[in-house]
Image (cartoon, rainbow, N blue to C red; front, side):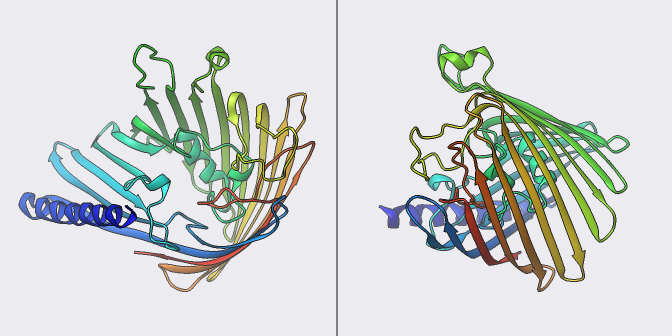
Length: 363
């Protein structure tokens, strides 16, 4: 069965290449780009009840992928665009995102003078806000998602979504996103919506993101999961300062990345329905060297008081414009039976301590 799925995936990718290439040649005003990112690393995790684990992981800093994107000029300032992006596990050759071929992003849309509207499987505006706040860009074992929630129904993504991104006006831009629950007889079940407001001027970047999701239980109909995040960066030159502050309310608003009770607590931790998050970080660059550091706090406002802290440090070395190496380490302190783990961009982690080293190439 695995061999058959691999053949199907290969045939599908080949068809996309042939079709996009043929369309580009026929229309003349179209452009299609094939791109990718290959990331593989060695990860050592410890602190879980099952003991330490050493892994060869794909997508430790960023998920490995193969993508196709294109646009076509339609005239009068309008263009059509599309993106198809497949996740790849370099360590074993399988598809990421649960075996979905184009499981990272896939959408088609129109771009005009007032902005862009796209339909498909896309990142939530709240997740893009988290990427801005995190010095590690939500990757490596220092991933801010270890403590701060990722939103959407597909780990930072919304399936069946419609997204509008405005044009930039004086450094100000915005996004709106909506995804119906698609449940017959119950329009509210699984429904999601979110948005973001961004400001960029000179060295300062600000972004406020929000996401709501109905979490499909009767109790959640009173409000669902609501995550709000403010992110800010200021670039002093060689040093960039990072700040993130989040408020998470409702059932399912902040869950542990590893749901399998990795520390063997009784009862098993189920996350919190009322919490705040604080991220402080730095990025320091000098030639090919970049040093990243972050401190993240999860403040559980419920009676369980399952707080957590994460301290992380990392280094990236640019071998060329497209290739770099990286190393990072992270340590989480869980309190009162909290169950947060030190994962990375593609793995939820199995303990409260982790170190990773790897190489990443883009084309």
